Length: 255
Image (cartoon, rainbow, N blue to C red):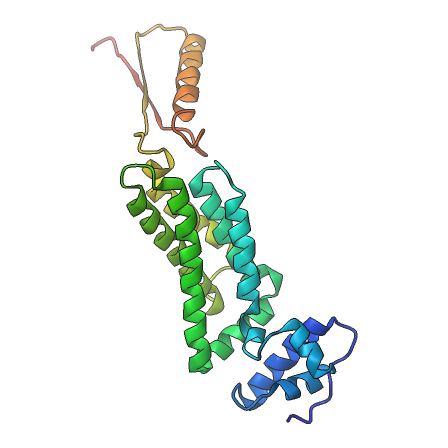
């Protein structure tokens, strides 16, 4: 049992327990640290520890349990919202829990998990649970379509992979000072790859304006604007975030 002085009582008990546990895991090793030692270091009774954490390893993983439940509820409440947009927000929720809520605690957990094989195995299992959660939602939205089950599996794996890749880069200090922006750029890339899925299989339309020399510019502009609006409104997911490309070709006098 550690002889370190108890943590100050000003913070809430759960935060003190978590901080005490991580301190002891780092100082004397995960296997050598007991619940009694954590409780003493946090300045709480043993029973108070178990009011907040069901076990020693829950100090490391309870945030996954709570976060996955929030993500599940979020996706269930999305209704008919576009699947791609819903998945983007779900991934952002998970990523933000690391980089915005308490990044120092997240980094300490990461270092600990890397060092302890039994914790590493639990972390891998949790990564897979998020992927299953994404897949369950996407199957509920896409299975009725031709190849919908295949799309759901591919998309679930892709969104999970983007999150995991960006999180690993952040943990290694390989992202900018604005990690959420970095994630958004990666998600933009993935969304563009799934452009056809977003549109329910409807091809992107090109607006081509062919007109005679001397056509009134305002009339041309009005016509192209109407065509763009009609093209942007197509597809089951509603208007897209960026307008379809418009190609304008002037007919010269030599045509």
